[in-house]
Length: 197
Image (cartoon, rainbow, N blue to C red; front, side):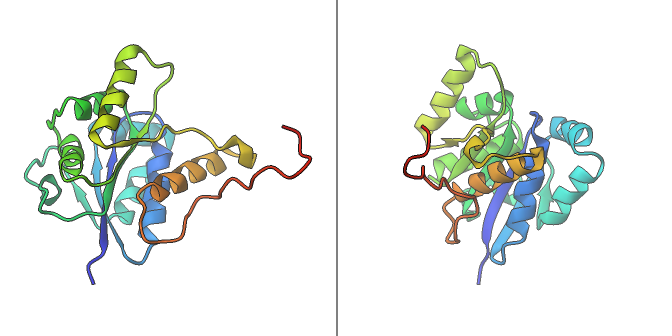
């Protein structure tokens, strides 16, 4: 039986641990195969935010790491079947490149392939505040079919650690791929009758 291939792109925005959590969760799924792309800027961010083990953890979780400039890689073609792609974290440079159809790296080429093949593409954007160019790029990729999922904490779950916040974002992101598995993220329980609003 062929596994669900998921492409995980990691760009240089802050929030590198989100990618590590996503890769770890995906690799624990029996029928999932992770194809990893890491930009040079992401390598620096991983080392700064996660430490030297960050990149090694990502690579260990992946079935294959594709070099960022290997435009001839299997995932650069629409004939390579996947169940979707996540870019996490997704910098505004990467978002803008995807919005412009600028397939100058394997990461942006793979994202472009997912759009043209009408497959799930989830962009975990990381920037604040946002100027009009950022907003227009996010609107454009949404119009093309991508899902823009900013790395926003689920405060209603009352997280007490950064790890809890990152884990919930990672789980929610994977859920957006709509894989044939039970939801990973803890869900909103609803307000109890009589609870303060």
